[in-house]
Amino acid sequence: MSSIISSTRPRDDDLADFLLSHHELEERGDRCFAIDQKGGRWICARCSGWVIGALIAMTAILIGATAFPGQFFLILPIPAFIDWGGRKLNFFQSDKKAGFITGMLMGLAVPRFIDGAIHFEPHALAGFAIYLGAFMVITIAASRIGGRIRG
Picture (tube, rainbow, N blue to C red):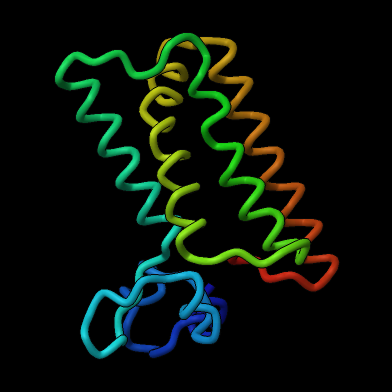
């Protein structure tokens, strides 16, 4: 495990960089936002969008707003999978703005997926299984064609 982490981090002594960006140094300019003035700390654009989307959805739920009508939440992760998968499989290039927006859409669905899993709702569990399966297929396909594991 340590050999994987040390080969992907910019500095061996800084686990925070790896956890916040999880991208190679040469990928960070178009996949991450610099979070300090020197450009020494980066945060993944898609993951930061995911967190913000999830926080927005959780806040809406806490103030009593209906999360999403019906099964609408099931389609929100689709743009993120298209953007991430297309990039990982080298079908096209995208930028950090697209990663942030698609990550936020996916994040908006997270509290609803969690609620559905807690209550054993078949459509939420099936949706989660489908997205997990797609993630695995894309990751395996990318590793076989030489794509990066950390899209």
